[in-house]
Image 1 (cartoon, rainbow, N blue to C red):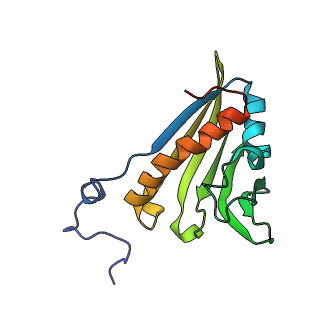
Image 2 (cartoon, one colour; image 1 turned 45 degrees about the vertical axis):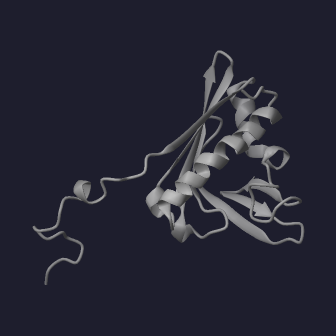
Length: 164
């Protein structure tokens, strides 16, 4: 019996099948503080800066937090929505998570947030990738290309930075 997971000789090479792969979305901001404080502000206090009115499952009045290995939103009535599962936690330098707000892990993308020292303070680089995991990859990438800059601008303001 032929192996179900092997490609037959007539199958095109994988690199030829998906030539229109979506590129990672990279959004970078700088906050006027050290790396450790920038990481802490991002991961310990998202409830103070995340724009829940526009970018959440339950809207204004809900609460977002990093809890154990989850990024979690809790509504005022106690309902919860897991936004992501953290699978690599390297404080204060980075974290990586599968990302699926208002969805399920079945349709997840990936985010990595990296914190690095620069002359002005800390550069925070968010890399959002894995679009093939989204239910509608192109639409998902386009939506995040609009929303991540807004979200990170709120973080910069919270950390005392100026928005360009």
